[in-house]
Structures are given as structure tokens and as C-alpha cells.
Length: 153
Image (tube, rainbow, N blue to C red; front, side, top):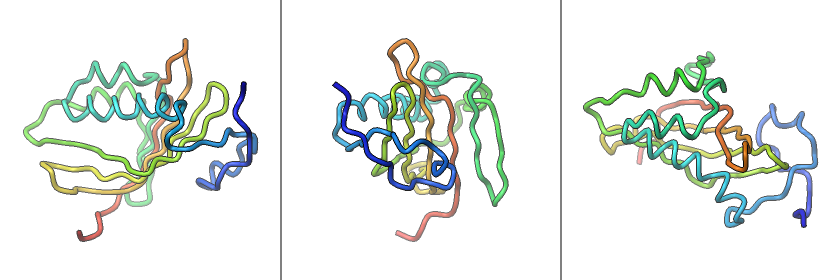
């Protein structure tokens, strides 16, 4: 049985052009947990500098678009993973209040994030993940984010 459908909330100008038939989602829905699993696994692997663990969560030819100072930096996800090499600093990216939208084998996750460097906020912004279900498993097909200084806490 398919879930009830309703028009999605406005997520970004880019999503305004999408079909109004996206499935309604709630944060506790089982489907949402399956969509969020590769995102969380990607971040967990990144915090361990585990390239194999990160690579297992992505379509390597997918793209990352990182908005920095109003300019996009684009890199293939496979190349992005290659750039995550062990360093002296502890890194961690945390998302909160993720919005998940699913339609058949496509999903989008939109969430504010904070990037921690040695446990302290380094930068904040919004992450947008595009995912595709391949052979029954969700994989990250694209990432977009923006970055700014974190508000004083």
C-alpha cells in the first residue's frame, strides 16, 4: 500500500520545479530512517576518516556542490571521498531536524548542520542530499551544502 500523497513543503527554489506528487514524510517513519541511514553512515565514516565506509554510501560519479562565499565548488563524490584523509583534528558533521521526501526510488534530505573541528563549531549551514534506491539500498547520488560562520552559542 502506498502512503497518502500531498504537495511537498517548499524546500528551495530548485525543488519548486519538482512534481507535486512527493510522498508526505514524518521524521519517525520507517522509510525516513532507511533514507537517513546512508547519510548518517557517511558522516560516521567521515569522522573516522574511513574512505571505504564513505564510498559504500555514495554513487561515486554523483556530484557534490559546495557553496563557498557565494560561489559553487563542484567535485565528484568519489573525488570528495578521496580528499578525506586522516588528519590530526577530530571532525564531525551533525545534522538536525532533517526533512525527508521520498517518491518511489528517489529521495531528498534537507537539514541544517554544524561541522565540528576538535569538538568546536567550525562552520554551519544546510545540507541537501539526493538519494537513489539501487538494488533495494539507498545511496547518496548528490550533495549540496552552503557554509557560514556559526552563530555565537
